[in-house]
Image 1 (cartoon, rainbow, N blue to C red):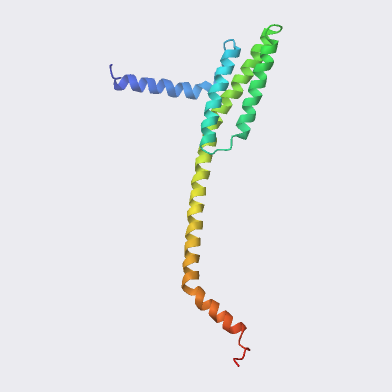
Image 2 (image 1 turned 45 degrees about the vertical axis):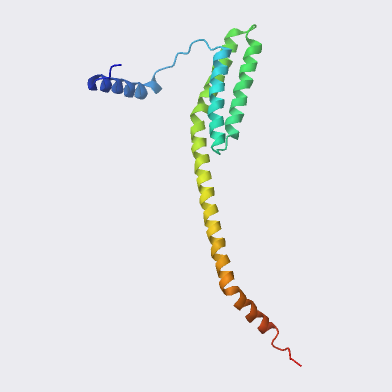
Length: 159
């Protein structure tokens, strides 16, 4: 297997950078969307949402969007025989929703990881506070308890 030479690699990088920069301004021509393409895209989105969920991210919004995409696919399947152009439009909308979900899922995954790290730090702080309070009570508790008892019972007479 040949390694890419520096000029070829830099040429590829320049082409990739130009594609990324120009891409938002070029109209996207989509091929005919089909039910299986839309299902495939939704399944890929589902996998990314599942990863975000396992990382502890809040994926409720993403799941709602996936359900919306599945509803569009189902509606497209019902219309496929009577109105194929409308069905393709619905499939295309479902694919766009799935693409958005795929883009948002890593953000939810990162938020979940961050929330879990914060939760672990808070647990450590709480345990440290409990340990310090336990030591203070162990060290000064008996003396404080006897002082309070003696003050509250100073009128008692031993007879």
